[in-house]
Amino acid sequence: RVSTARPIPKPVAIALLIAAGFVVVVVIGSLLRGPARLPPPFGVAATGLLAFDMDGGIVLAEPDGSGIRPLRPSDAKQYGATFSRDGTRVAFWQEDGWKVVGGNAEKAADLWVVNVDGSGAVNLTPDLDVAPIRFAPTGSWSPDGSSIAFTADTEAGMYVVATDGRSPPRAIGDASLARMYPKWAPDGSLIAFAGMELNAPGDLAFPPQPRVYVIRPDG
Image 1 (cartoon, rainbow, N blue to C red):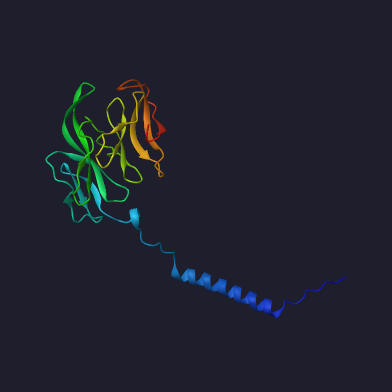
Image 2 (cartoon, helix red, strand yellow; image 1 turned 30 degrees about the vertical axis):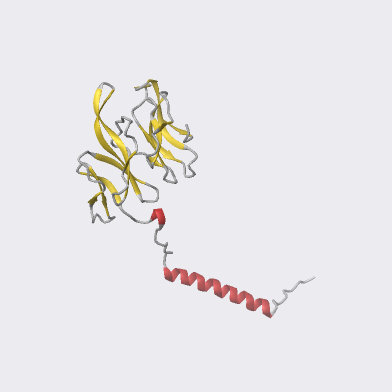
């Protein structure tokens, strides 16, 4: 038996031609437009002020380097500026006296938080002697901006403190690890950090073997 192709009904043929024409128009249009353009960044991704150390203080500047101004002028040295996630506040270290660490005198510092316009400055660690790591950020802001996790050269090693300054820092570490570079999880449930085992407080195990750990904000 010889089978023969049946003609396509006219309405179906017209529909197929229209669909094919639409695809061709879309393809040609996309080629003429070039690469797709993304919308400008907004919210926390928007281009905004920069905060950095200059001449012993924290300054703010526009992304193009213009409009440089001090964040909170002080005779004490400031460093380690870190923006809150919504870009409205800045945390930083400000030197305050000396502390003996490992038999050596080092500059102690307090953790401060201030609004980007320089108002509302709060000292979060007035009663905690800390000699921070100068090349590391001040700490890590919690996703909602209510707390900061930071490390210190103390037996506890790591703390969480409320950014309103109404309560003292809460230790969430112990003497078993040297803790550095805390980072909040996006949902605020955990804090990751780099840790190295200690033989005794202040005495790193050899050879040092840094690992990544996580801990709940309540310790």
